[in-house]
Image (cartoon, rainbow, N blue to C red; front, side):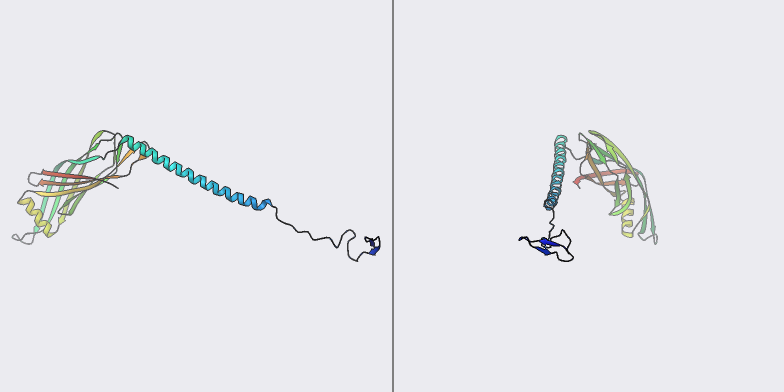
Length: 244
């Protein structure tokens, strides 16, 4: 057993089990986190928020810049609505076939065969080109659809006039009794069959790489044909432009 001296120089025996150089009165040590740990975490969050704020400001600036460029181009070009009109209608064939219950009774059904050619004129008064999308024109008799004419899309240069041709072919379409009676009466007695041509034409103005919103041109025409002469006797059109 070993002894140790106290403050008075007296030697006392060392308690058993205690290491030779360990002081049993030594205070317990505590460990604390590094003082820079919390500050580094808060600085990372602030840096992330700063990056998000900078990105938002950058996107806002780019959006305003694009809007300003478009506005300058629009003010410089001063775009005008395109003009689209049904110029000519030529009747190539008109045929009406009737069926009645008896020779004295009125027509109970009728079939119409029709082949007409329509010539549209497109006028571009702008300093830039116009892109037309594919369009469809419906031919109707008293609200009954008879046929559809399809016009393919095309590009029209600035300050130019272009003619587009399309054909409507109606092959023996059957009409109900009331419409059949009216058709036979118009064709045989009056030699006058009134048809309506309706359709929408979509156009966009292109400036450099920018495309304007779609402008819809509505074509609404009344055409009157003569079955006996196989010709057009009357035409009246109205064109409305609507932004969509």
